Length: 229
Image (cartoon, rainbow, N blue to C red; front, top):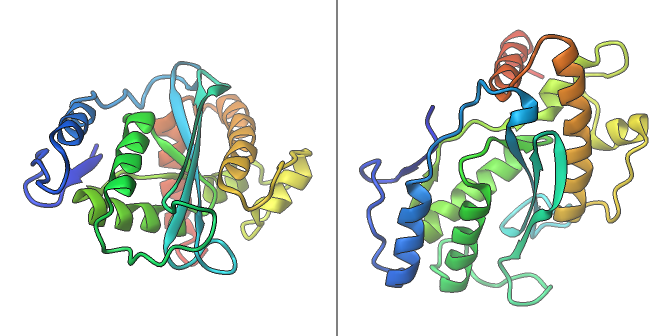
């Protein structure tokens, strides 16, 4: 399965803009083996990702914050949480997304090491995936080619009796009584989405969908059935 690939040759070509230490860290991440996505949920590690943008809705324009949380062997691991702001402060950044920023590059390498090669989980993947892909490409010359597991597609299929295909994240959180500590903040929303993932894994297992690979296949099938969804 394709994961992250270098923009040029598919190999970890050193980026001369990075210090030698960061080039080595990037090479080390590249050598991390890909996971076996056919393993059962309770033997797998997922990483739930959420982001904040610079727009008024926190999901537009430039990527500002990445939040992530690991779900390992079915359990949310609070010792495995990641938060990084691409800005020095809390306010909007004036730095153009295409401008190389060594601090941002180091933070993104930290993100890659946190993720490893685990499958990524989001709710509504489009903005998060594109924002992270664009920023990794500009800051590290690394291209994201990994498929994301999007719970916005998976949940309606697993819960046909309660969910609608156009439900927002808040609708699912309300339905299952999941509270978001600070809604629209990346780490808080990642935690809420991680709890939704746990519910999805439990229902999926009862339906015979036993692995990350199964969830990816379920999402693919639903996208094929509802291309305009």
